[in-house]
Length: 187
Image (cartoon, rainbow, N blue to C red):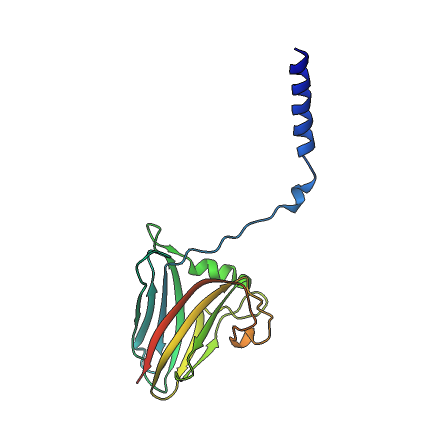
């Protein structure tokens, strides 16, 4: 009976000693979004013709290659652009776009093209600190060309880094939520 009292006493001390005042240091873990599909919709500002770029990777890191499609773009044209991010592993598909916008201070889309591709991007949306998000943008094409366009969603990058406001990804850091690479033809 004496050993039972000693064990009970130690158990009680362990419970009380595990309590602390650290409750005010609660960390909220904001996990990376699962994004399987990125769809870019481009609307020609003169003709309202719609062009689409889409990246779908329904098995994530699995053995299947992503399905990537890209409509040819017209030369010397300005497009109004928007991006939709989906998690198609959910049923119905979960639209992550709204979350990216709501957490705009933690997200930025970057548009990185090969030097052969004549394009210019301008951000049309901003977070609460007036830094770009990139879900809404304009794309202006130059002369006929072709090359690679990468669209990269960065989470928790340094939006105040040199060049970040102009879409330069080099100094931003953070985690990549999704990176989609498109072979683009401007004709």
